[in-house]
Amino acid sequence: MWKGLQPRPVFGELNAGGWWSIDEHSRCIVNPGIYRINFNTGKYSTGGFFPYVSIVFEIGESQKLEHFHVPLLLSPFSFSTYRGS
Image (cartoon, rainbow, N blue to C red; front, side, top):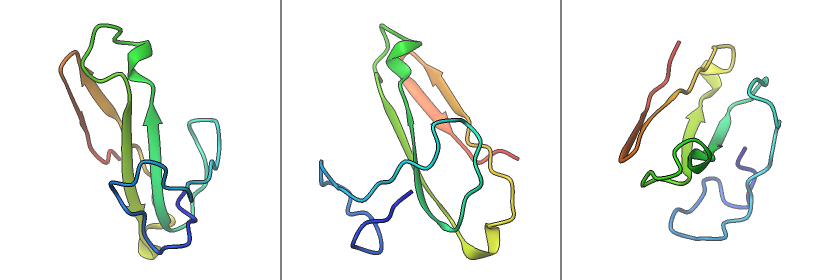
């Protein structure tokens, strides 16, 4: 979860401190805020183009009681994601 000094992360900064780990498991209870999920895709697709994928998304105050499922669809040369139900 983003808890940096700025209200939003500044993209383009390589070492943007302010990301806090909230859980090492795949399920957690979240509060409104900006989140990042990191996927070690190189572990599953050793010859693929994307060895690592990072997805950043925001949960609003009105969404805090909703269920979020963020799947990653991966092929050797592309990836896609969406907010599942």
